Amino acid sequence: MSATLLELRAVTAGYGDVVVLHEISFSAREGSVTALIGSNGAGKTTTMRCVAGLLRPDNGTIAWRGGVINALSASERVELGISLVPEGRLIFPDFTVEENLSIGAFNPRAKPNRNRRRDEMYGLFPRLRERRGQHAGTMSGGEQQMLALARGLMAEPKLLLLDEPSLGLAPSIISQLFDIVDTVRRMGVTIVIVEQNVHRTLQIADYVYVLENGQIVIHGDAQSCAENPNIKQAYLGLY
Ligand SMILES: Nc1ncnc2c1ncn2[C@@H]1O[C@H](COP(=O)(O)OP(=O)(O)OP(=O)(O)O)[C@@H](O)[C@H]1O
Ligand SMILES: [Mg+2]
Image 1 (cartoon, rainbow, N blue to C red):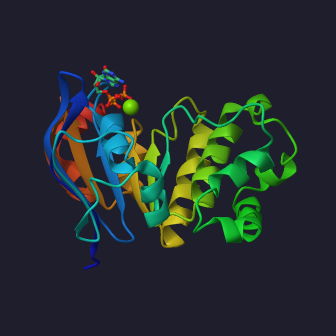
Image 2 (spheres, rainbow, N blue to C red):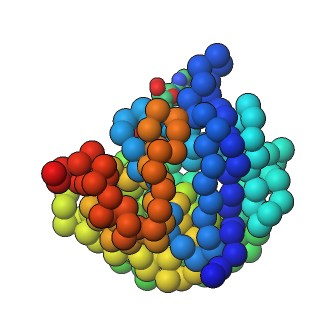
């Protein structure tokens, strides 16, 4: 079995006096796809923000290859290999596709390989090559999501955090997106994905955690989760 790349141990976090995550523990093995599912407001984005270093836990530890990284800043975590593709894409609308991609390689580790990496991204996302000179804000929702994903990959991540990549996309684009996520995993990148599209996510994930009200209530391999009656009822619309 592969080594544990990321591990959260009893992480408690929130905003001001409001506690959102209550002692959550989860881990991601090297080379795997780990899914985090749960209803709106469960704390999924908050969890991703803690891993990326955008929010400091009040308690608990975040470990990377066994070493505690709580004290590292967001940019130090990018340098380690942690890259977040945030919910809602957050690309720079007035910059071109090419400029958005270049910004993704701002970290010292990725910067020297920027041009080669960008060509790789154009190979993976041919539409972005066609649109390289276009302002990102004028692209379609699906194209913008592909750009956000490609920009995340420009940082040469070892761990890619995807927060609801399929949100708002048409079914045919969602299908392409999941195919690309699978390709990225085969490139050797470990993935933690937050998704509302549970059916499709269970097909690509190795391991699944269910977050409810800031607590992990179910976890297991994807197949056992797909057969779990509570998950079927709450997240797959099956009875
Ligand atoms: N900056 C903030 N300040 C205060 N409360 C916040 C902040 N961000 C999130 N929250 C609250 O934390 C809780 C968890 O939010 P979070 O964004 O982590 O949920 P989520 O599981 O990602 O939901 P969704 O599926 O809707 O994206 C919510 O009740 C939310 O209102
Ligand atoms: Mg969210």
